Length: 327
Image (cartoon, rainbow, N blue to C red):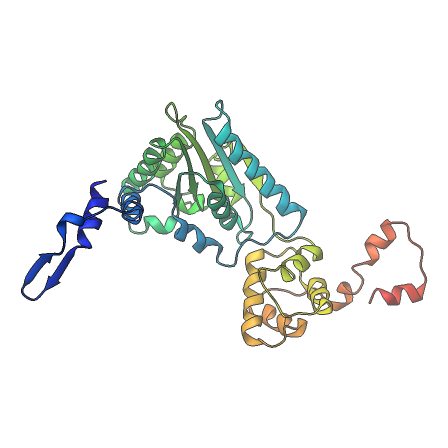
């Protein structure tokens, strides 16, 4: 309220070279816009609320639904979010998103937070802790959880947990103080009248095994790379990308991509091709830029007969003419 009054008062103050004057002080009125602005300022200063801009930065290209695998992941996380929100018996839920680098774990976590309608969301990333000592990192993590406990419903995202604990496989070496802080807080039941959903991401299974992190979580969700040509086709034809590409070119690209491929890598090559060829997106240009990034293409001799295995498995019988159609 005090901040809202301050904002309302500032509208009636005029600054000039001769000094400061107040115009019509008797008619100062506090509007809803003043209250909203005061609330935003309070959130920023106290660390409350949802960091929408920060979360959106982790999903600049939107979230692409590439098939049944993605739908299962999304449905599972949505159900867990609902459970924490509605169940009186679930005051703490810890979820681990596990998968290869570039598989979209951070984007999925950010999208979950944006659509959760939780009043408090805090995302902790290794970038936040650059230049901090182990003790400072532990204190910052503890402060984030303390803020979450002050609200009835909150979500904490801990991204790239292997970098958070400074894990190095040789040794192995890691920041033990940070690790112990995470192990305690991830399993700590919130105070009464408070529920917390903790979502962590990890790209290195060695961390989970060597540091016994997997056992910390109630639920482990695997986020794989794109495994089938159908997944690649779904990405290329998604409305979020708005690609100027024919169906034949899409099929050619999906056949030639060496699988599995991370969705992050695929989107990077798509954007490279789009910028280079804004008028027409072709498989040839895509393949050229895919190879330029160090990724592989499936040999044409193999790509041509990708349909042969499923056809035989289905018990189909065909002659040489039918084989030619698979090309």
